[in-house]
Structures are given as structure tokens and as C-alpha cells.
Length: 310
Image (cartoon, rainbow, N blue to C red; front, side):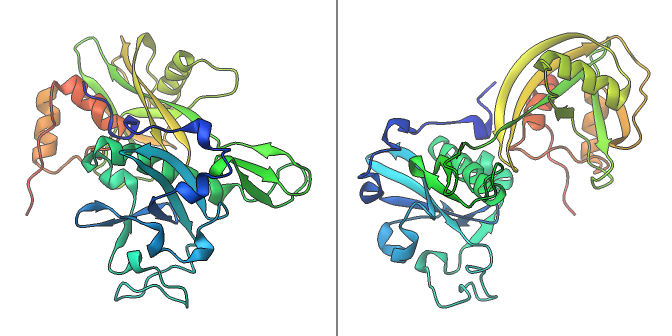
């Protein structure tokens, strides 16, 4: 199984340079993130030189350092969601113009992650994660003071009490559960579109191991008892700050009892049944960038069929 789309890091993250006072002058290429989405055009990610940016954005108040690749020093520009909103013709509102934004669009990384190169995926995942952290954590949880950037955007320092904060990651588990007949358990969440099904998943609780979280979530959501767990891999999911730990899991249970709140429907599928459901457009599978898609295709034995289009 190849590495999951958003787990690929092929650039040098260059963490040792984050406190270098000369780093800002060496930045040469910039990604653009706004409101949890990243700028793209027909060729892929939009990345621009410093000359395409207004001077006021070339400070750590608006930037985070991503690392090095092919002689370039990469950073992400965190754009304000209102100030840089585009009008219907693709032009930024307001007085400040960013040439690189003209006729580009911003999209969620979850929609395009599988289409990016390894270099682009690693840069874009870090850029999205850091952007989500900046939007979420603007003030000190201890005294309420405003946070300022440190370590090239990888730390937040309270300007009043000097408390240092770091980007937060929430561990989650996701599992491909098989029964004694090698059928796969998929569930439907209450807030999804009617045809969407995926693997069961959930956050790891305080004081809990990953394996225990797999067993607990499986029982809470679908009423099945897990007999064996096997680690599959992991992938960051920065929407806004999850790390998905993926597992293969097995159960002797055949009866399913959903919780009725988070999960409203669940069933076991044979490979033939899943194929028929997809090809008839009665079931929608997880997007190609997701861990769930990789887990399902691991059980399926290859790429899932493409549903027909009208």
C-alpha cells in the first residue's frame, strides 16, 4: 500500500532554521491559505515569489515557514478571510491587491490532496494545519493576552505573560472492521448526505491507548466487540487538527446496534455488495484523500469502482 496522500513529506522541514533571525530574508516561494482553504489554479498549487506580495505581508505576523526544497525556502501566507475575499471577477476586495490571487480559487486540501505531488502535499498539509491553528488560537488561554508568532510561525508567545503555545494535534482512530466472513463494516453518520458510508472513527479519550479507542468506538457506535486490532498507518487530517491513526480490526459479532445519534445506519458489505452499491449510485464512498478510502481499498483489494455519471 502506498503512503497516504497527506502523509507524504518529501521536502526538508528544516526545523533548525526556525529561530534563525535571517530566515525571513531567505524566503523565496509562498503558498496562500485563507479560511482553511489553499489557493490553486489549473496547474495545481499557486506558489508565488515575494515580489508578488505587498510588503506588509512579509512578516511573521502573516507567515509560517514550511521548509526547503530544490534550493527554495517555502512559506505560507495566512490571508485574512474578509480582507482578501474575491469579487465575482476574481479580484480581491479592498485596497490591497495581490497579483497572485487574480483569477485563482481557494479549495479545501481534502478535495485535491491525492492529486498533488509528494512535495506539494507535504507543504500544503503543513500550511493548512498552521493556518487552522492560527485561526483557532489567537489569545493566551492563561491570561487572555494576544499571541504573537515565534519560531517562524511554529510557536505562539503571549505578549503579556510570555506563555509559549504550540500547534495542537488531536489523535483519532479509524478502523476497517471485518467479520468472520471477511465482510467490511461501514456506517452512516447522522450529519452526512443519505448515501454516504465510511469506516467507523472517533477521538482518543484522555488516558486511553489507540487500541482501546478502537474497541471502545466500535462498541459505542455499532455495538460490535473487537477481537483483534492491527495497525495500518496514519495521516494528518488538518480540518482542523486531527491525526488519524488507522487500523484493521476484526469482530466475531454479526448483529449491529447503532447508537442512533452519531451513527444512524451501519451494515456489513461483501466486496460484491459494495461494488453493486457504488455502481448503482446508492452508496457514496469517502474522498480519495481520506484515510477511510485507503482502508476500504485495502480490504477491497484495489481501487474502488468509479460510479457512473448521468
